[in-house]
Length: 320
Ligand SMILES: Nc1nc2c(ncn2[C@@H]2O[C@H](COP(=O)(O)OP(=O)(O)OP(=O)(O)O)[C@@H](O)[C@H]2O)c(=O)[nH]1
Ligand SMILES: [Mg+2]
Image (cartoon, rainbow, N blue to C red):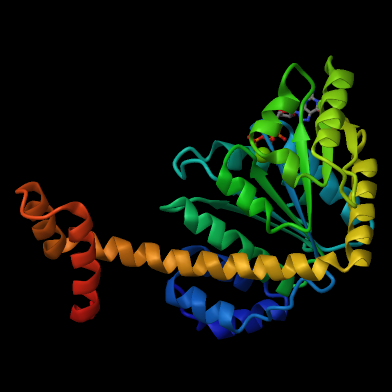
């Protein structure tokens, strides 16, 4: 797939080679031996000097529009920015990603902005594994801000958001939107809440709902603010960036950052282990041996539990 050795790619990325960065991200996304080799040469303690912001919320909430506006503000302040748009839906629809491309067009010729979309290939666990690694690659490439857009509707998205230093949850005005966010588990992971599309009715009620639910969730050292924004008019975006920076300062001062980073490394390792076991399970459950075992269970010669044990232990001895 790539003519360059993974270690050379990592080195080229460190020199600011954008084409190498794109290739390295593809390698990491694909997983497997090349990804392992590349990641092994990547410094683990990246993140020094870089800050990852997860932007999550229901489909169509305005995440991409807000992200594009944030990029604009960060660029105005001279920062180098990477955007990772994660699409957990089918790789065949591609709709959201296409939309993102359009919204990000303003930044497409800026050499200090790097935009990348990632879709699920194969199982969802692959995405949960690849996203934190992609963030690590982007940090190593010297981007001081990494914005990660995910659709916050399922567990995987919540896991991906766990790779962020600050998580922004985007909701819209309207009956029950705050409740939906709560159901999707977004109240727990949000550090900053934004009621976007504040040009529509029902903003006050949604803000009130969110503030109420956050209070019920109990006292935290950081009290997540609930902001209003109209991303399409750049309203409330400067305030959002202020809130993110305040959160960053509090996080950095609290010493809790180190703990979070360790937890994230633990998650990454767990993801890698899981990824390898899943691959192994796929190997066990395919081919002639598997077919034979299935037939034996179907014929009533053995039960599924025994069959599974036989498959696993047999493979250990067979060394496949
Ligand atoms: N009225 C109004 N429309 C907005 C606002 N922000 C975004 N939109 C519109 O809402 C639509 C969806 O915006 P996106 O930024 O693509 O939303 P998203 O959350 O990234 O969507 P997905 O990635 O598909 O989940 C677009 O048509 C935007 O122009 C806003 O503040 N007010
Ligand atoms: Mg989007």
